[in-house]
Length: 333
Image (tube, rainbow, N blue to C red; front, side, top):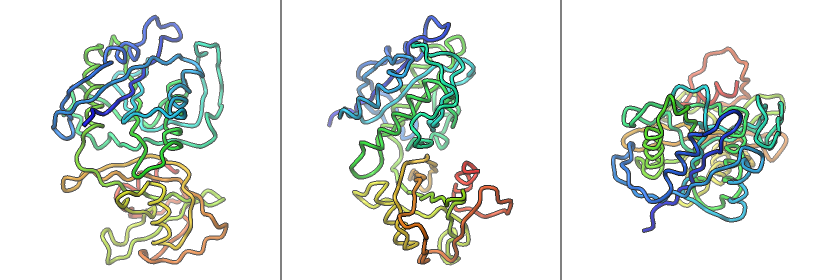
């Protein structure tokens, strides 16, 4: 069996920097590797293809363009420099906004501009569930990749990965790692952590993928439903969804679950993000999917729930949520 193929990108120097640790690390890790996965404990092999991106619009579009042209990898990992960071940050969201503090290397300096108009793009992995003490150095998980080229490239890659994904399951996993300056994190330390992250993406505990449909109303509320008291987590509120069936895509699963549970036809738009937890040896990945109803006026017929309502993010009432849906609700506020 061929080793998984990993695309690892870094950026050239920008601003007043004469070097960029992300470029140094990306180039250093080109080639074949064997590393222990901190998540699974097994040795895994993988091949890294390195690419240095320019700090401009072309660089931000490079990986998305290669994907659109039909190139494929098993994992994509972007690296970037975070000047203000004291520790490494694993980014899980690419926002749809640019507001550049300094010009990019082509002289472009945009303020309060959307990247694609498609909204926030979320990763299909959730490092918040990873045991940090099993890694060679600490890291934090962030939902703010900034508003410069790092965020632009991440947003465009995540968006394109969904556009080219037509098979079962989820799009190829992609993360962005913000590295501190080399005075706070040596290249050797950064190299080791990046390899550990790749190994974790290659091999983790057995995964069960779950979708949660997020359907907004025209006035900014969201449809939620209350689980039957006789069911697991009975009496809690959730964004309806369920497990992917074998051979099923994330979008098809969302359509099926909403039809089965609520008799509502929805159109999945894009992934908002993922929340994971380990239970009885399995990694449960719950993927939030932004959807829109196909019919203007919803006619909900409850099958697996006892109640539904349009929930407002400004609501002050305390609710019991299913699993980590409380975190999703908090992000929608």
